[in-house]
Image (cartoon, rainbow, N blue to C red; front, side, top):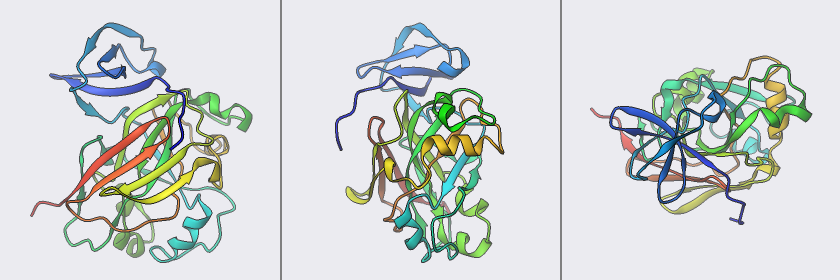
Length: 266
């Protein structure tokens, strides 16, 4: 991936029983009083980088965009028959907060499920409330960018007709490892690798609906609030994962989100 100016990297972590926000400074974590969009500021103390990491924010809602890379539309017919061309308007669905998984956490493959797929995505994190914002102003409402894995149970996606179970089950929304604050989302390299083998590779400039349009369009229907996450869609290259696999989603300027896969306990 190409070099990119290093933005501030907001992380969320646990110190004993305290959940903290902070900036990852490489050799230490600079603790903040809260997230920047909540009025946070440096707290005047540091924590070790070995602290237990959490997802970098606790979103009120996770909005996911489907079928937003042209080549992915074609391959989607094999796992969820439907559209044969990119949609005329963004297709969106939700994942609940209970689906969030921290960097390093384990994606659980449900018992009896035949096919579980990862989907590497670039996600936007909202920093200012957005309601009916113009496209020209939309990115001013974005705090930063993170890496996202839209884990998808294909059996259920085909069977159910709607995607709440297939996309919203526990552990199906890993994101992180940080929020790259102020990072321009319009042309970033994106990769997904499983066990070190790259499966998906794209640039966000190839999105059918770009980041500014998505924020503006979504804000016509739903109020986007600080800390909300918008997963912008996955490129071609979907394929199953199995217990024992390691999944990596890398977004230029953000870093790499790493999660393992385990079987649901009996």
